Length: 403
Ligand SMILES: Nc1ncnc2c1ncn2[C@@H]1O[C@H](COP(=O)(O)OP(=O)(O)OP(=O)(O)O)[C@@H](O)[C@H]1O
Ligand SMILES: [Mg+2]
Image 1 (tube, rainbow, N blue to C red):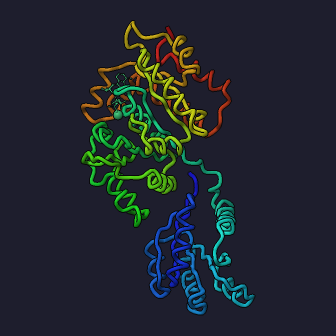
Image 2: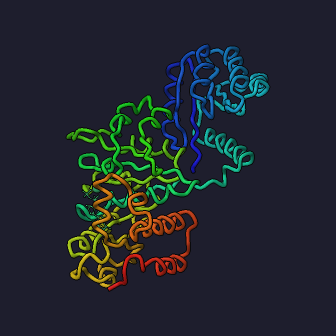
Image 3: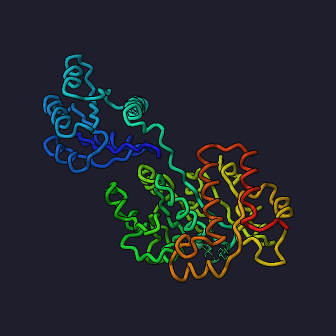
């Protein structure tokens, strides 16, 4: 998981606090957990929010500011206290360090200085806990080339397969805001949706976001689509990116099921993805749309290289186009094939029970498990294309022989 740093800020000066806040909100590895304009209330704030970093701007009252540093260090020894001041006076810096501040940063704060300070903290954390060896969060955005092609069933069952590993923590984000049905597949009646998250975005903290997710018994958490259909998206692309940044601090895998309208929100979800899974079936309209979608993705920087085309419902009927022909038409390899098993899939959906529970030994369930292994390995270990080809060869029996 990528380290996110949760920060609490105190600065009695409204204007410099505003500037600090703006700077912090622009850094994606930082989550502004709390802000305060009063030194005297700040110890309670940090005890309640338990931030990784307490940023104390001391110019408003250096003596009170430095006393506050000592108090935070005493009350919350694991919190890293950063001091910022426009003064370069040696005695002030010395006192701040003696009181336990980890960093003394020039005000107005520069982003490079702040990031360098964070890096030093990260190095210390890595050295102590080995956190630097933990896996970075994988964001897998699932998109389709036609309605009903299998995006949601893939998102849910891939998430469940990934969640089988104890070391993985998985969340599904239903970004099909109008017609999403991920909650149905998991038989979840959510208390909160992505709408609540968006409405509280300015005061969103870690615990509120966690409360907005519903955990399913089979492992993954779900952030569902809004209850009502609205004529405008409840969340902006930038807000989505902030939410994803915060989720990255908790989850090893985020699976985003986007709509098929390729609106700015969907594109944002494609941009933040490590892998873009393009789901298709082997019929002419689908393959034509794969070509059109790939052309669309080519217009954006760095999107096309993340694409992995997955053929769903292999062996559906005799009229299916052959894999060779499909590869030729779309001009790239098929990353994975999922077999057709309508009876099992539809029963799983109607019962609101994922395949891993509905049919643990089924062909389709095993295929999802192999898909999860391949995708996880590919993304995290940069498996060479030769190895990947071998694996695909091994697993392709699950999807039926190529025609
Ligand atoms: N591998 C499969 N074998 C058989 N049936 C499948 C398979 N994958 C999906 N289906 C069926 O296809 C239908 C559509 O699947 P799903 O809802 O996952 O597609 P979607 O792309 O999310 O659709 P939408 O465009 O509505 O969002 C479902 O009824 C599901 O049971
Ligand atoms: Mg869907």
